Structure formats: C-alpha cells, structure tokens
Image (cartoon, rainbow, N blue to C red; front, side):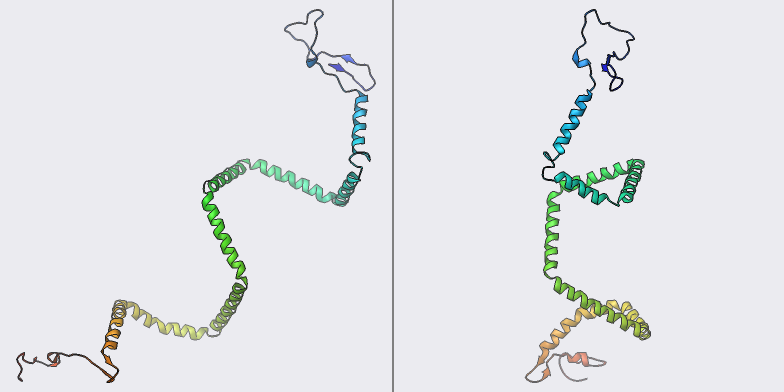
Length: 241
C-alpha cells in the first residue's frame, strides 16, 4: 500500500499487516496489483468535484433552473419548521426504540398477518364473491339513498314521539301493565286450551258457513232427539214413555 501521511508529504510504501510468520517473499519477487492499494490523488479529488459541479451547473442539470427551483422549494418548506422536524426525528427515534423493545410481539403480529393473507389467498373465490355481493348492496343503497334517508328520518321522528308519549303517560302505562299481569298469567296457564281453541276455531267457522242458508236466512242442521231426552232416551221402535 502506498501511504501519504499528509496532503503535501512524500509517499512511502507500507506493507501490512506486519509479518509474524509464514512464507517469505523471495528475492526479485513481485506483489500482484490486486493486493495493492493507492490513495486518491488530490488532483483526482479536485477533478471529481469539478465534474460534479459542471453536471449540476447551468450547463447541466440546472440548465432549465430545475435544481434552483428544487432548492428554493425545499428551503421554503423547511423555513420555520426546524423545531417540528427535530421533534419528528426524536419521535421516530422513540418509535424505533419501542419497536426494538417489542420485536417479539411485532414478529408475532407479522406472522399472524401472513397467515391471514394466506387464508385469503386460499379462499380467493369466496372473497371475490363476498366482495361482489357487498358491492351490489352498496350500489343498491347508493341508488335508494334518498328513500333510505327519508325512512330513517321518519323513523327518528316516530321514535321521538313514542319516547315523548311514554314519558308523558308513564304512570298510566304502568297501571295498564299491572292490570295485564293477571290476564297474561291466566293465558299462560291455559295455553293448552287456547291452542286447542285456535286449532278447532277455523273448522267450526267453516261448518257454520256451510250450514247457513242465505235464501231462508236460517242455519240448517241435524239433531238426534235421543240426545235431548232426559233422563231416559226415546225407544228405538217409537212410542212414548
């Protein structure tokens, strides 16, 4: 390695690392260039800086004033925001420390998220179907949003009126509810009889309609006189008793 201690000092050759043992370089031996290094000349550094300045100058990237506008816009945006930028950097550092302290939970969350996305991928058909149905419902609601809004407004008004009625007649409603308690208790106890009545009532009504004679204005029917006798039935062969 060719070493220059300072910018203006003479250079010298340095062999590194220091030899401590092993094969030795023979007389008239050569060191391959791939194992050597030469520091950059000061002239080369100046030349690189000059090329960069020319590339960004008026004959290069800033020929249309783009670089100047970028710098002016950046300066205008950063002007007066030093405190906010400092706070943002501090908060970013705090967030990084928090993530560093909760790396296990973060990786667990990422693993769960990966499992969720894998499940969605495996059920892509169902997801697309659900998305399409949701879009259909959303379109239906969007088309009828006027009617829906009117219905919700009327429902809100009705609920307000009901609430006002209940507040104004709370005592009366409580009395009515208390009076209904015995009735509901009786109906609960007689629910079997009520069920039988509800089952037989349609048939009885149908029979009544069939027996009614609209021309005579009467209800026709048949009766067994033996059922009317008391305490003994009529003889089957006629006669009296």
